[in-house]
Amino acid sequence: MEFDLVWLLLGLPLAFMLGWGASRLDLRQLRAENRSVPKAYFKGLNFLLNEQQDKAIDAFIEAVQNDPDTSELHFALGNLFRRRGEYDRAVRVHEHLLSRGDLGQKDRERAQHALALDFLKAGLLDRAEDALARLEGTPFEGQARLALLAIYERSRDWPRAAAIASKMHGAGQGDFSARQAHYLCEQALEMAAAQDPASARALLEKALAAAPEAARPRIELARLQQRQGQPQAAAATLKTLASEAPAALPLAAALLVETAQASGQTAQALELLQQHYAAAPSLDVLDAIVALTTDSGQADPQGRLWYLRHLENEPSLVAAAKWIKGERLEHEQYHPQVQRALDHATLPLTRYRCAACGFEARQHFWQCPGCQSWDSYPARRIEEL
Image (tube, rainbow, N blue to C red):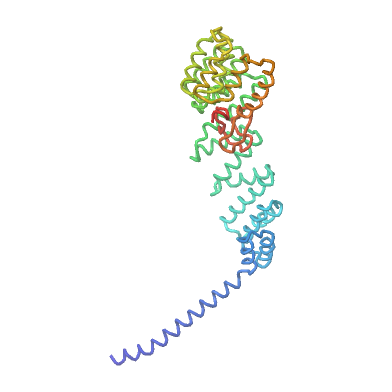
């Protein structure tokens, strides 16, 4: 017992000394690590938080010069250059990172993605395409494919856009069936412009198979059939459109009038339009009804009664202007001036508006010219929204 007590008394001071020595080593290591981080890095971070980007860039450049092996400083500096629009300097920073042999795989992939973004922002689409293609099989693969898709759409390279969309669809990155149908329709329009209606028709039928619920393939197919002198087939295609995608019928209302008049199916088309108007009133459908009513020689040849019916339920300035156009006013000599003023006032109301960015246009677009979104234009005029 006495022996054990002696060893215990000797062991306590020894344990204390060992613990004190270990704590000193930890403090020295912490101080060494603090000294290894350049002070310029903290200066740059402070400038960045205070939104002083010029001073932050200078501080980060100094930090990189003091410690060229720190990859995080390079990434911070490259991102700052890109945000300021100095794309050539951002490219040099990220290319320097990729040239380092000691860079880890994760940082290498990150630098490759950053370099692709530099090229995209700079508008160097060819170099961006090459940089993005190298990201296949990396954690940045999904983002790279989306960027490639945007490049191919911007350059109107529809076959390559379709190939990327097919990859993304197969990888579960979203449903691209409607987008695929648009690509096929774009190619079909090119074939039709090149006087190759057979190829155009084949592409449109393929688009219908890819997205049976999509409205555009049927509308484009009906236009093609009408141009080829097949009004009955075109009318049948639009009838299917009315049942499969009724919300898009206003976009094809004028075309339906043409096909009905050419095929002698005015009564059937008028009945179809009236049924659609009763379910969902629309200015374009209303104009088509008025046109067919005039053509059929019914009691109201100018369609004024239909515009009045619309005004009973909808306070529409567009419908009112069209009704007044066919009326005789008390001071008829002033009618042209009044009509011109009304037409000018209603012109902005007859435009279409993108639901994604608010871009307005006189015609309907399947892809917004402003934000490049697909199917973002409702099939209704601004006054009806």
